[in-house]
Length: 474
Image (cartoon, rainbow, N blue to C red; front, side):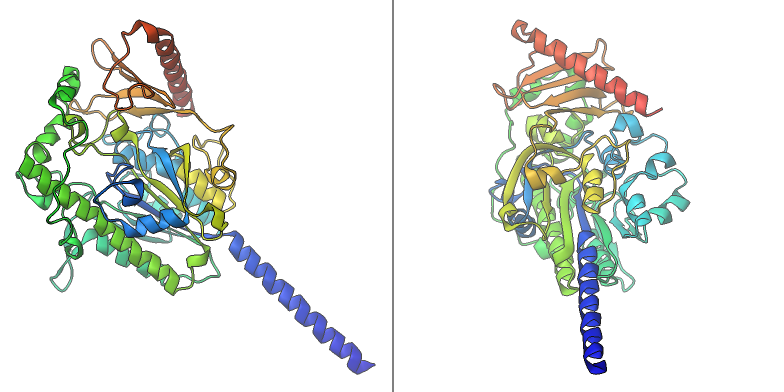
């Protein structure tokens, strides 16, 4: 009898241990690791998975094939400082009030930032690369937000001299640092690694005609695109540029155009270099994701890929970003969750996804409640259910940086109509575009009698949204 009881006790103990282990595994799986790649200065169509006929992005393409690609992803402010502040805080620029030349992001907003909340919830948090923003009480807030921190020394990419005197590309160094963090991780603690490139930003101080130093690319991709003729910029007819008002014709968009795109020689050289930089960071991503697999962490790591703003590349006779056109606002966005059903693999979603949705999505994936102050929304319901009935059909866009060469504006980008108000012009200058009849936004319908009711509706929506956002900033 004693032997029977002892055997039963042993079986129960084994069963209990097995159940406990299962619960532990389920608990671990319920908190996925998160790897967030952020690219600098790349619009949505500069990926081979998005249909670009030349650029080679095999790692990003693989993420799109295994995950979900958002075909209507946008930033709410098209400049790195304000956009990265929005990605950190989940807030529009009007609310967080940060861009170049502005005071640091308030600590009260940082307490709601995704890395701070993840760290408070037990995540091991890391940031590698270009932070691109100033923080209130930076010296105390950075360690409160990140366990592992390797910040870029500059905002633009290039080659960095190592201790042995050799040169290594900044994107590759970021990959090395990300792998260093990954190799320190274990399955017992969830982590969030934000890898923020300063590629494919141009080296702004380089104005030498035809010099590919504008876009310094890693040596590993130097052979790419050498014998390929780059197609002309979209919307390159000179009349498109000439049709703009003087304040846009004489803006920084046009000034930088003459640095990089205005001659055939410069255009061909710089476009090849720009595409090489894209393929260069793709190589780095491949190494980082391979490190995940080598550590056995890949099956529980959600990967998010996006960019901080769009880019003109000579379109409309412009360089840079900053304005209300699609090339400026559109960005790539891909989310790959290895835990998801195979039915999700390779899907595209046309829901409007915004940069301010990224922190809400990260927190939702981690099972952390979204702060009430967030102005973005988690994309998880879209990933899981394809939720469209209650999803947004427009968003507020803006650019507030104080620069007399970059005109400020506010606007609304809707599913069909786009409204913009360059409010500091005398008098204020408005745009209205109908994307259904004019997808390239070549015609301004502000003075068209058939669109006056739409104009009033868009104007009212823009004003009321701006007032609401300003109220939340106080």
